[in-house]
Image 1 (cartoon, rainbow, N blue to C red):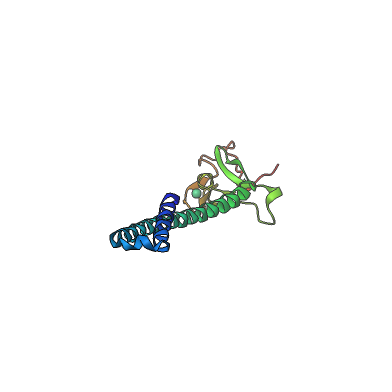
Image 2 (image 1 turned 135 degrees about the vertical axis):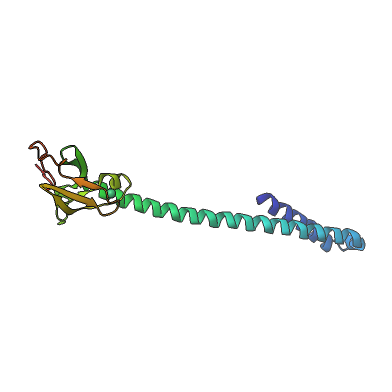
Length: 164
Ligand SMILES: [Zn+2]
């Protein structure tokens, strides 16, 4: 764009010199050619300026999106600090709220899959099948079981967050 503006300015200066030096005006064709050339260069500079303005506006929109993304990532990073991966039940992992980061919220678990997708998917109690409790993610609906259903003593139920 700088080149187009410089060319337009140079062309305008030629035209100005011709107007100021009245003897050049005697050649009407020369004057019309100079005016036409100046107009052409001014239009080129204007087109270039508009293109630069469009680019600047597109960049401003992109910066706005990136700033929103940074805000979102900062908020998620703050959430990340509040949870830790732990064994929900034997061989079943989920994220639990750290006691030290609870800020008065009740103890709860978060779906590990949703957590990986930067979402807080609370695990809510759904129902029990015998002694096995089932919890479901409120977002992806994945079901978490507290045991595999054989009532084996090794299937320790840990659904209440154990901060020990
Ligand atoms: Zn989920």
